[in-house]
Image 1 (cartoon, rainbow, N blue to C red):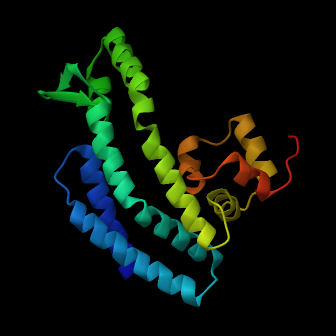
Image 2: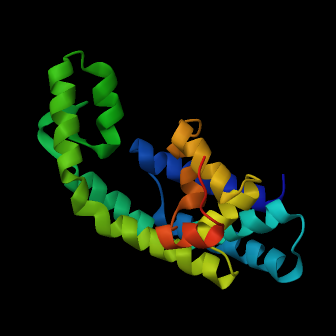
Length: 197
């Protein structure tokens, strides 16, 4: 396993622990992100091929630079998107424990009530989403790209193909979100000519 892969695995473990409500270290996450950034900058400073590694290096730097916002986002999301009305294992129900609640609660009306409540609270964290997107746009701009440009190149697609695929429902948001993070309609318009499917 390369040093890059080793660091990525360690960071992924910390992210998993964070999302699962297990002990994790913000300081370790920051250190691992800094080390990953160092490796990627070294690669980008010396190579432009293989192209998929070049694009992944930019993505890794963007993810690392978003870490502070991501940590604040997670903390805020757990606090603001929560309810005292229900609990999971004796703890207040929040965005992080929603899946557990959903899988153990048979009453559809309770699940719907919590879901609707959480959705109504989502605008309270919109500023963090905007910050994440801005950080990504800034990082990609340093390399003369947008997040969408990188995604399309990595997937070997054009804007029109992506747009058609999306309209046909053949791609999912989860497959696209990390590469699209930070793109705007203006970015998408610049990526290629807009046509019809």
